[in-house]
Length: 234
View 1: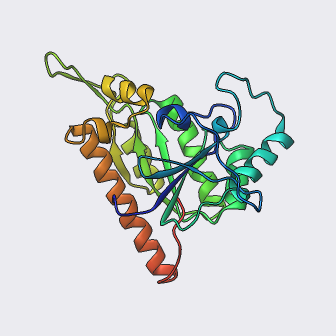
View 2: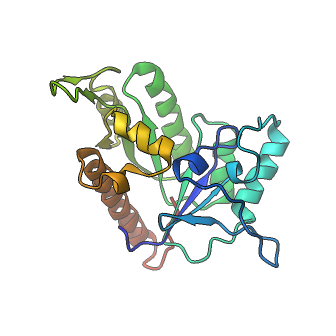
């Protein structure tokens, strides 16, 4: 996985978090043809609205302004030669999601949800939206799947158990990862140092690694079905 050239596009206009989670503080450079150059951190090329506005500045924009911002983040970035472009979208099925499916030829979508019913309602809507616009769904990821006490080792299913797997079964999808609720994930994210680097041998890092390999394998399979030379975008 480390040999792939990866880009990360933060498409959450109102709540961009990639600059914090990737510890990026500088503004992107601009090429002669007026395209922004992604900031590279941890061998990942990153672009986010959070790199273009002040850190605590509120983004109070109506729909047309959001569309202009998404246009800038998609067409106005010099990504170079990538193997995979990961697009992190906000929850929901609104302007951002529709715009991304129109502006980018998405190779696949991952649905991320916590296990409780309230969250899974939105997950189902998201899955149906991508299916409607003919974007293949690679699977569902259950986030905050469980909490394992660091003192006694007891496992607690704080947000319920089995909801994501049940939803996946009902929709004919695969639950491809269960990511636990864990304090060091939060700490490493706040510090801008991904846990896969700060604790590469931990159970959660292995879970992320397994997920990454599954995603790449699924994308390769889809690409081989459609064209042996198809470029992958996620």
